[in-house]
Image 1 (tube, rainbow, N blue to C red):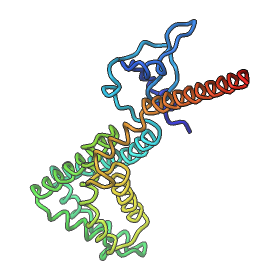
Image 2: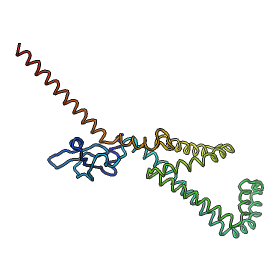
Image 3: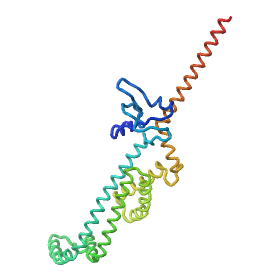
Length: 276
């Protein structure tokens, strides 16, 4: 798949007029319909005035090819973070609502529980030792202030997930570092929780988080890995269209020089034959 054409098809082309004559020659063309300029992302000549001009060093750094693919992968992780934000936000709201009406719920629970237990016993069910019932009893013993603090904590975690998702969606350097650090800090607890009870859901979640951390460190060169930020930015510049144009210009210059040398050699050979 041509990721450059995919991105240009979605958000449009990016054109730029370099001041250097050699580069400008390869970035500009004329047609009956008017002037054409090459897109910095996909390299296609488009009928549009350049968005900016200046030296090649001042041209905007445009993500191309695998960087566009990498950005889409990070957005998949971002969507997963947005889903977590909604889930934990909903849990925080539910706990907060429960803390404000706990007394009435507790009174209803204590009043109706004997009736429910009696009905289920007649059907052959004994909920006296139900794990879910025991956990619910524990929650009922929490004070309103404790429940409010739990709700605030869960809401704060939901906000962290939201910030992670925004940073990954925008593919910002700070967002990549933030997601890597926050996800790494949560891994020890996830591993401990996995050692207590093994489920496919827990395995999937910890697998996603480990994959995200490794992907960010290796592909975005975080923490100085593979040369760090400087190497990452150099790789972006080396993948720019100007690099391709410079190679085209150098190849054309070498071909022209070789042709001129060949023509000169043939002319000299003809001159020698004619003199003899």
